[in-house]
Length: 397
Image (cartoon, rainbow, N blue to C red; front, side, top):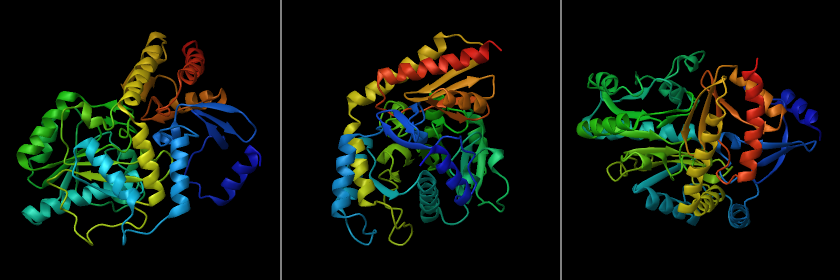
């Protein structure tokens, strides 16, 4: 097929809920993608942070292929080794007590929300079920996670939304405390870097003070690591850089390097909240996806995580050193980077794509860079050359 064949077929048969760029991708190698006509693209997007190991990782391919030959699915009516092993690895490396597996970030956040409300109901009864989230946050596309999302742009069309969400200002402890003063709050839920909101890192002191505030009042601290987790910021999970111990951590995206997998990690105090029948999913813990997750966790050694931090610093420093008028800020952690621009960020990302670099947008003015964690120095430099060329062009207008 040609690029146009794929685009035409998609437009005819797939519901039009995405504003796609006119690129049809066929294959990938390392951190470079190719369309159906052979054009190459340096990948600074990794499928929105999903393809954590890039393309063609031999250990990941061997793991999922071997599992596919043995057992593709059983449901959670039975036990499987890959799910059990993946759960142990995650708990051992985070200090959490247990995990619930699901398929996506939105489902992981739904699970975290349900867990928090049941925890509070079990201890305090009805009437203590509100969850505080932050303005500029993003927690998913289901009706409930849209309600949790602290951006008005998402609060439209699909009324009525799930009730029970209150919103506070990021990096404003007084705002969080004020919203929680109503006495009906069971949890505070936040991203440590607000990804879709514009790659906005929260202040460490704010995070630590909110964590202590929640602990003192038995308000659960839910950390949404759907985008920041699985090595993306230079540690296995971002919260490990902030000196806090969340009650619940949601994750997805890069955990299975391209397969649909996610989960909810629970601390010892929350691990017994779900009982049989209170939460479930047919595909959660799927053996092939779990085998992929085990392979990913095996690749995310301390050495590789240190490299992620170094690569991120290299990228941010390079972009800042250009001192281009169109660049208003460069921020982020590890390989989750936001480049604030004064031009149209979507137009700029389109121009990058035309010149062989895939990037993402975020917020109202941010080019978001999330390459595979295994991207090579040569691929980084090739991508930076394209980024500099395009942003220099906008700076000269």
